[in-house]
Amino acid sequence: MNQLKVKEYLINKGFGERFIEFDESTATVEAAAIAIGCESDQIAKSITLYAPEKGYAILVVASGSRKIDNKLFKNTFGDKAKMLKYEDVEDLVGHRVGGVCPFEVKKSTKVYLDESLKRQKILYPAGGSSNTVVRLEFEEFLNLCDFIDWVSVTK
Image (tube, rainbow, N blue to C red):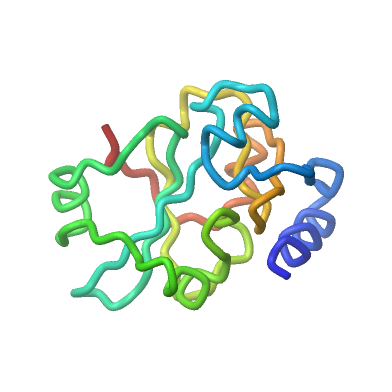
């Protein structure tokens, strides 16, 4: 199970106690915010996209209330934003829908962080399953993510 890979990764980095498992679903921004008791913008939402011209998955992590702006995405990546199909997410990214996070993704997946995250002191990315999250301070989140660059692709 993917949450075990994420939990092991966090333990190895000294953040195992930050892994939180819930009885209820945290698969959506709204459900996670309610379960945690935080604002939706503190949820580090993983948006999985496909770059057809480039042939790989792009994972953009943004504040929970944000959505991809197609014009900004195209200006940044040179391609139209195309969401991954539900059935392709686990195969291309390494996590199932509802548990996608920027930790322990497939090597071919390109991870980018949206500027919207910079407004948060505490972030809650998913933990690899639909009922797990990780509580991290902003700097800790940055140090644990293997990301390529900051982007501004949301509205």
